[in-house]
Length: 523
Image 1 (cartoon, rainbow, N blue to C red):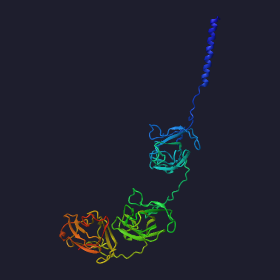
Image 2 (spheres, rainbow, N blue to C red):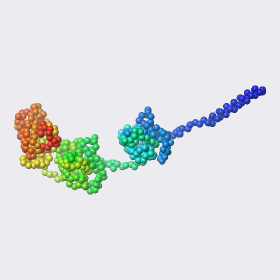
Image 3 (tube, helix red, strand yellow):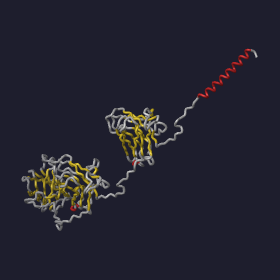
Image 4 (cartoon, helix red, strand yellow):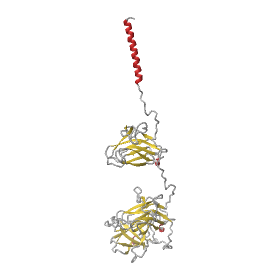
């Protein structure tokens, strides 16, 4: 081998050795990345731990960015030493700004119905969790009392099991709008777990409704108490202020009466005729600090019937009874209660506690019926006692006590017509439903007791004949006067209705002007 050949061989050998050394070095320095979540099995009871179990998109729109991106946990301490957490920016100037998780289908709460979430909050406030999208919206709330510290909040969603809800909505500082437009909440470990909240036993489970009980404000709340079911009840349930004596119930009703309004009232609308056949005695318990008249009135049917008692005992529960035997078969649909009835010298808010409003069997001795054996005389429209033969349209209370018994009217019962004196043509009407026979009896007679000197108008209408009007003057006030309206000119005419207008054509009166009537008849 010459020097040239020997030198070339060395070069080749040296290059080969170098190539092997480089190759060996490369194999030793390449490190394949290891996925820390590679062997983690997806657990859909965990909504997100912001690390390996991020199982549902957090946000209102999955095509956009999440409302809670994962960030480094810069506050590792206490109950949360996770590396990653979620960051949610709440608009504190919006009372119901929220964070939403849409599961896409009904979420199964059968085995895990308790929601847990860790929160690192910048301020105290209410955290509201709501499940929705199914057959029943269920919401729970907790109060966050610790600031800048990890706390775990738990929500009991047992009642939402099988309700088919598809969404979870979280409201931070719910209902408040006095904060900053950007308030940062750190969240972590949002998950459903086995429910360890105590099971609350429904004390009313197995109780059969008894519709003779209007309300005991506990298990037998069978009718809405108030003028409009779309609004709040007039008698909300509250704690019994005095569990003693006649009433040891835990819960009662609370009614606030306007003592400056003489006829402010509490109303129960049964929606249909209430059957008093077997139970016509109304009972109710009242706790009050004020004496006065309590009136119970049934209306909405054929005849208005009212009864009253005097509340004389204060500071303890008293049971009052109202005998509605005469209202049996009168088809009334409403019960109205007037506390401190007729008085308007009180305060705007006077509290009455009430309980156990119910109809019971009536054991009150039956008084002799003065109308037994009295034959109907259809020429008498009404004497408000035995001859109440036609139905009135208008604000008439029939059969009230005659508080003005004197002179020509010694009747026990009369009618009270409430005229809207601000309405020129407010009226009281009797519809015969057919032609009124005026061939022989065509003079309308009636007794009127008025506190005002006004005109009243009597009118025949509703048939095939032209309407006929007669004006009369009420000149005597404060006593009973009998008036005769001569309709003899209409003896052969066809009219179906009698209409009476008090203070006719005038609107200078009050909205509740009273006129008392009796012995309305044809002669």
